[in-house]
Every structure is written in structure tokens, then in C-alpha cells.
Image 1 (tube, rainbow, N blue to C red):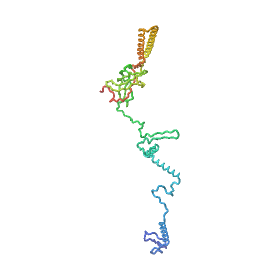
Image 2: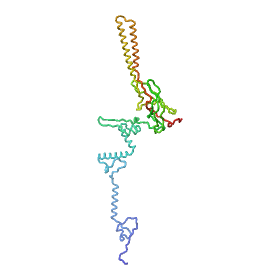
Image 3: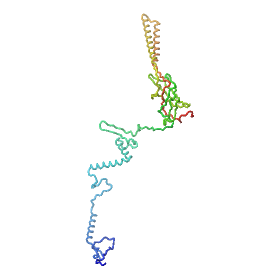
Length: 370
């Protein structure tokens, strides 16, 4: 198919790494084989080089801030301009630091310890070990304005008097009767406080262990051996009893020291009948008044017989005898006035033996297991 258009000719540069040439230089009519120099481009390049040389030789006015400088540059847009702005920024930084320290217990402890030292005036002389963690956790001083001012002093270096060092103790064995429990019993022999003596009683019901309450330790019918006190003061109405031994029905025995006896209401001692000896006291008072009246009458008779003359031997003898008999009788009657009351506890009296020490058994009670 015939056409009038000339074929398209593509001009390729000889050196691909060279910069592109001006359009006039690329035209095939103007560049038969050598590049044509561009005077305008050379003039612009010389002007740029001249300005660069002037800039290098000129003195610089730019302020260089080194990394070790503490404050921001004066022309920094983020630097605080006024004092209030600086105070606000410092408060914000302190809040950030406090928020970061709240998550670290050690940091919070050190901060609280520093506050305690500042409040008590101890400063850096008192180490943290002397104050302790309890002192750091509690406020040491509380003050208010005016008269109402309360202060608490630092006791961190001393032992805590409210701390109890004892720890719960597990039972030594499952067959144990702890202190504080009671053994119900009934009195077999009576008690009279005129003289001290031994008494007998009998366990009224079975006694089981403290931890579980399933193991029989003291059976019903076991005997109790004890003693009572005869030291009774005037006005006393209770007699003191101490139980010393338990004798089991199969012949085994257990020494329990001196455990006190108490009535069914828990009061120490036994209270049943009280003999205050009122008849004896009032009889002694009437007898003393009769003796005193007789002595006074005999003395008057002797004085009347000796008015008209010198006293004879019989009057003097009767006067001395009346005085001495009166004194002896008065002393005897006065002893009866100071007599102590007699306390009587009848057999069958129901009471409890208070366990004051832990009773540990090797095994539950079984008859004749020895």
C-alpha cells in the first residue's frame, strides 16, 4: 500500500550516562557529530558557583545548640515563655512521675520513707531498716491548726506491743481434752470446813475428745479424788476444792494436778449450807453480861462492908477473886465471838471439774486394755 509519509527516524545518544542535551543540540540538523556549547547554561552555572563560594567564606550567624545544654533554645517554639507556664509544666511532669512510681512498690516505699524522714526530722541519719515497712505504711504525725493538735511518735525502732507472737497449735493427738472444757461430776463424800480432808466424787457422764467429739476419753462412773480447804474467813460462803486424780473403772489412774471445782453456773468453789453459829455467839454474849454484872455486885458489897472500919481479910480476898474470875471468863467468851462459820457441802452435790491443762491420751478408753 503506497504512502507519502517519510519513515520515522529514532536518534539514540552515544553515551547513556551523559546528561540530556538541549533540544537544539539533539536536532540532527544542528548536531552532525559534535555537541554545540550552550552559553546561557554556562553563565547560570558560574553564577551558582560564585554564590556558593561567597556563602562558604561568609561568617555564620546560626546558633548551634549542643546536646549537653540544659535549657531549650531561645527560638524553640515549645519552650515556656512565662513563669506560670513553667510552673504548670513542672506540675504536669511531677504527676507523670507519680503515676509511674505508683506501679512500683519499691519506689512507693522509698517515697513514703522520704516523707517520714522529712516529717520526723530524722533526715538521712536513720536507715530504712530501722524504720521498717510498718512505720512506712502508717502516718507518724497528724497535726491541725489551733489548740486541737495530736501527734504520734515514731515507734518503728521498738517492738510492736500489739503484736502477738503465739501461733495456733494443732492437737498433739486426736485423743486430747483441751484446757477450758469441763468434766461433769457428782459429790460422793460430804465436806465440812471445820477440818481439811480428802473428798471423793464420780464422773456423771461420758467425756469425749475436743477435736472430733467421737472418741471416749473419760467414761461415766470414773472416780475423782481431791482435797478441800478449811481456811474460812468470817462472811465466807464458798469452800475451795482441788481435784488431783482420776481413777477409771478398770483400775487405770491419771494424775491431773490440782484442777479446781466449780458449781453448775461456773462459780469457783462449792456453796451449799453455811453455819454461822449465831446461837453460840449470842449465848456467849449473854454469859459475858452476867459475869460482868456479878463482878460489879461483889465489888459494891465489899466497899459497903469496909465503910465503918478497916477492910478485913475476907472482903479483900473476895474482891480479888471476883476480879480474876471476871477477866478469865470475859476472855473465854470473847474467843467464842470470833468463831468462823462452818461450810457444809452435802453428798450428791453436782459440780464441774474445770480442765486447766491439756489432757492427752494415747488411745480412746477401753476397759482392761493394758
